[in-house]
Image 1 (cartoon, one colour):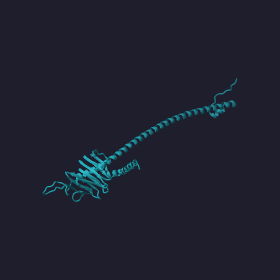
Image 2: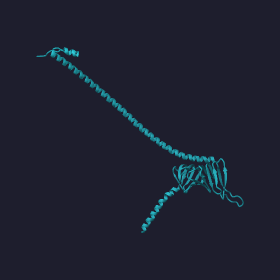
Image 3: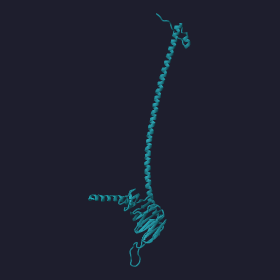
Image 4: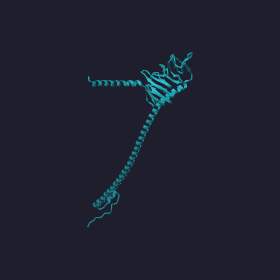
Length: 318
């Protein structure tokens, strides 16, 4: 085998490997798509609806909101002043929250979504339709569940946040002689807070509303297009109908003119026929008078037959 042939074989193998690898990598790297956004960027570029989000992308929301659809039914909503990035493996999507807040909606059968804030990892509990939020506030992690339940993993024991509960996880501060700085250390302090969920739920519902509004806008645009098409069709139909009415009117005018001409022609023909008949009758009467006079020397019988006196007749001769 020549050196050229060997290089061709190697190049072919590399190309085959690249082609086989691209779909798998692309499929595993896709996080989801943008359902709606306001004042948000992805990788420094303005975030537009239907933009595909990939693993490794960085999202920043300023004074606005962004909604990312994960899988067929799960939704992740990012609030104002939020910075986050994305990772994906074969089993789940991970949102790495650097600052701000993220709300998530997870149906019982949706794509698994995990939120990581510092050393804390939050996932929807299995078997529940979950609506919740994770927020970073001054170094603390605030976790709230409005529907279903959230499982919280981090330093220390696993915790469950159920519907209506909100907990605040604060960095544990070492106490005692020898000092020690603040840090997560081997655990965290968990404070359950009542009545902190109103703003959280409004952010979630606002994000869901934006997603629905995007769908409604699409449907409205489709309806407008259909309405415009119907209006155009109606205008065409009206134009066709007007042409048909004009044609019928023209036909009626033509029929009326033709009928008038036919009637006039018939009347003239009838008049001529009547005159011809009268002339024929007169000729026949005169012939009868002449015949009587030649045979009888009188026109009495012709007068009796026709009831009219024959003209005076007399023999002519040299």
